[in-house]
Length: 502
Image 1 (cartoon, rainbow, N blue to C red):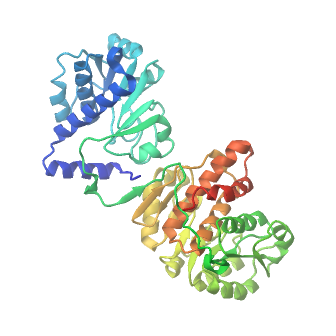
Image 2 (cartoon, helix red, strand yellow):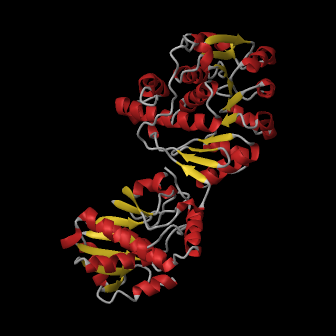
Image 3 (spheres, rainbow, N blue to C red):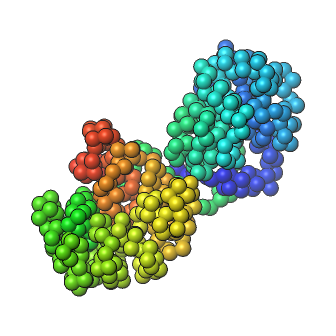
């Protein structure tokens, strides 16, 4: 499914206008499409309908819907949430409402219209909304939310931001959102998607081919992401992963990372870890080859591990580095030497990302071959921003980092964002139960497992993130979001993968 941002929508509309479809015609088409869908969806013949309109283009769409629903015999009223319309086309449409009663929200009758409506149409703000509404408009939103009628938002629930998916305190909570022409970030990203209710796209005759940038998401239903395997294949056909992860302090990171690569079907997985962590790690791994290497007294990799790691990295189809390895002077040396030695694909996670902060230009050595998987805190350190700033700009920051260094970025969190600088993917699987230590280690291993098998970085990241989230959803159903663990997610992967095989 392709998703379009507010800027892309402006470009699509401008292109349509240049080709002869006026903005007034677009407004008429949008209102007509919404009226038709609302009439059908709610069987509106004997319903009371209150259309709450803003001053701009979204309000104009609402005026059209009100006029046409009135023609169909519905009992319709219009409530002006912010006073009389100011947008030129909306004013033109407003002048055609002779048979529809119109009230200012300040009037008691306006409140009564909303309070007694069977269906409330929210046409206050469209994709241009930013920030928060003024006190009066926030009161309108609250009144809509407290009313008993079903709420339909035209294009976007008022109070939600189209691209960032942020919502204001009193954002309208819709039962149905009618996305004009196509879905937008607000419809698929959290938290705004939770305010949309059911989202249905209505066609108004716009050609979305006016923009070339790709912003996609997958259905939450299983996709055929994994190619069919030959009956004559052997382990060498499915790649070798070198996992440079873990320490005496964080043995679980090494276990989960290697497990992720194994479960995703890598032919060979070499788990390299500090020798002092051997008993904790080896006891929980059966399939990987163990590389127990020199370490310091505290149980982190020592420089003495470099020669072996460099040799193995040069032979690996994919090297995963960083999970739980620590940030000592020695691990910094290990990280730089291994990264430079890699001849094929690379996944950088956790402490590897933090070590990049000292010299992010190291990414030049793996340009076109690397996937990095930061959480918002790690992303913030790379950019010198706060975590809050990162979360408010997830898509542009992921795309900017990917484009600048020629890598694939997986910015984790609710609705993980993946970009290779030109394409953007937003994930829709997963749940709050995955917000715990170890989930990212498992994901990094899963990405590495697919890369070793020949997947390109962007495709590997998309597939792994989607399936990782689905595994989390299954684990939550079995054990609850409170009780589930990354190990539970790993346990359901083998059966789950059968749904993704071609």
